[in-house]
Image 1 (tube, one colour):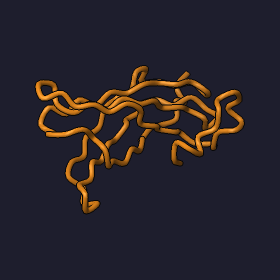
Image 2: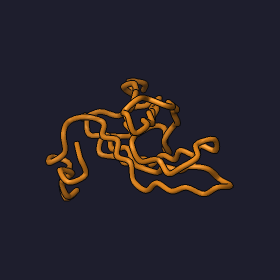
Image 3: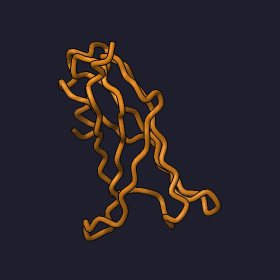
Image 4: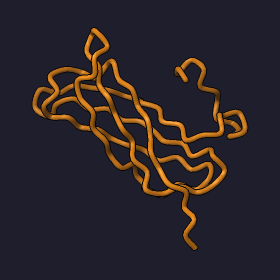
Length: 111
């Protein structure tokens, strides 16, 4: 779902019924490395836990160069809740431009 198709969040009913991961700002600092921030939205209708956001970085030929994962904050999201994530890759020599984000999670069926 490209950013141009991302609806205004006035109602979660306009969003697809899934866990949505969107990359936000990306920057590069020679000392800190490459950084990417973004959000995770739970819109599947039930609380989820053990969330992991995965980042795959591609080169100019669309070949995967690097794959890393992180846990968003908070790691448990109720229906409609929004979490944030942050990747800092010290060894990556430029701003993160071509990438793919996806999430993995489990239903929170604990009482």
